Amino acid sequence: MKTVRPGGALPSDAGYLYHATNLENARDITEDGFLLTHRPEYGTDQDVWPDGSRQKRSYFSARADAVWCFAPVHGEPVILRIARSAADFKRESTGDFYATTKIAAKHVEILTDDGWEPLA
Image 1 (cartoon, helix red, strand yellow):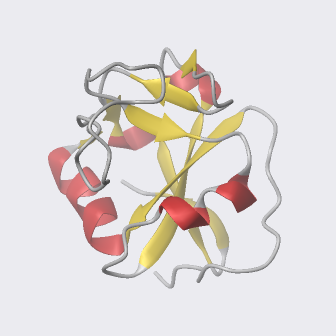
Image 2: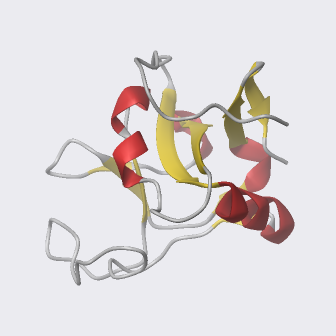
């Protein structure tokens, strides 16, 4: 599978939320069977979420072109998407969305040169 490199405008599809990570983490999602939640300091320089919470979460955006900057600095960046109906997403004050429970890998798609493909 050849993944799409960051850059340019990436259209967003209604009914989906987008998440940036790296290829290694995407492979872990496949192996673990889930996209896991993490505390705010995991992969960031913050110790609380924007609303002051420290609970485990995974963050998403309704804009596919807005998530590239959240990919880890190491590894090959990739974009994932998940149908909004696949989890109980909550809206953050920043306009982003988050889940507080792990999401089954069967609901996750990855952007490749051939378009969106199932991750698992």
